[in-house]
Image (cartoon, rainbow, N blue to C red; front, top):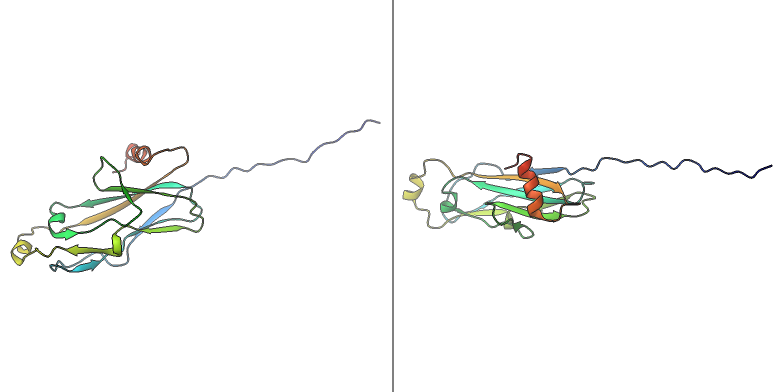
Length: 157
């Protein structure tokens, strides 16, 4: 008799990785211009749990003259992407339970003190600020610039 042996099967299952994000704000969408007033605004981006490591971007767009009336600061942890107006990024690693990050420092914008009644009456269209979030897996993409170029190639702003 010959000695023989065999192993059981070794099965490998490959699932699809994902990057899921959402942008939210609970402080509203319409605000009154009152000189010197701090206005609560809390836009934030969430990278859903179980998402892959990613480059996370926020694009801040403003209407013409917005900066003449309102001041704001982007929150800590974001880095301005050179060469692109209003684009900021950060790298999110191991978003197992989900990662939520604020966009505006202290969750406020401030109406400038020098906004007079005369200047306000000259406003023909209200200032508008828009936020849009993007994410790209960071595996095999070395820089935020490279990731942003992929977003632009895919039709992002």
